[in-house]
Image 1 (cartoon, rainbow, N blue to C red):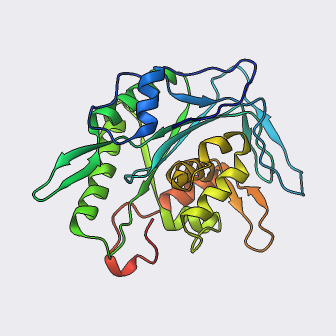
Image 2: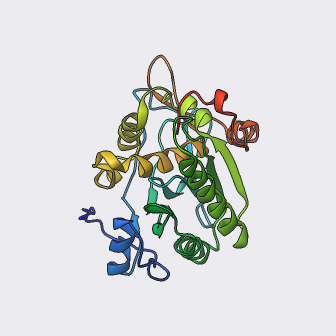
Amino acid sequence: MHICRPTITGFTRAPFSGPTSTGSLNSFSRLLTRAGQSTLIQPASTTVSTKRATGEIVPVKGVHPPLIIGIDPDGSGALAAIQVQAVPQPNAHVIHDADVELHDNPVEIFQGTTRKRRQADSKAIARIVKGLAAAHSGSTTRILLEVPQPNSLNGKHSWYQTGFSYGVWQGALAAHGFEVETVSCRRWKQDLQLNGKGKEGSRQLAIRLFPTASELLKRKKDHGRAEAMLIAAWALGLRIEPETDSVRVVPAAEVEESSEEAEDVLPLEEDVEEAC
């Protein structure tokens, strides 16, 4: 897989700790192994804006910029780490200078009773988390992990695989001292007006909000990367107005309150309106 990266002065990359497993199905992880580094897009300015370009942003001075991590834990998901150079304030409509780092969820193959199956590669996930902990040790970090909501039509292995991946991410993050918040896909998608729009709707919105990272989202199957980025954007306070489709930023306290209200358990089958 070929990934085009923008040519930018001062482009930096965080090191990737360790190789991926030999059984990995994750082409992005194999690319990281060859390159010996993870992918970090550091544009001069990543801007989210609307026609009403009002409000304020407050530059971060004298401290490491905050790091926001969004994780879509399913097999086709990803981890997106977004570091902003300016903290969005209430009623702001632009976010400048965002560094975007992406890791596809590593997956390994194992032999099932009748055929080969896939599941989260726990060792590779642990290496990703270890690398993030080392690279961003001086940053204020907020992590949002999506609570899986498997499709009720899927088989028992799919349910197991989804829960297993969620647990591996929880365990790896906790082992490295990270405090993890959870959010249901129904909640963040509702706030971003994505319910009922499917995976492609998520990919298109992520391209709109992060245009400098669009090369990493150009394939249909990149919806997992897109949703991880959107979870991080939701944690930053980005919301989409239902009538105007414009972007707004809510106060940090409101974002935290929304996260606290989110379900942190797997929903009952009859409660799932749309699989995430």
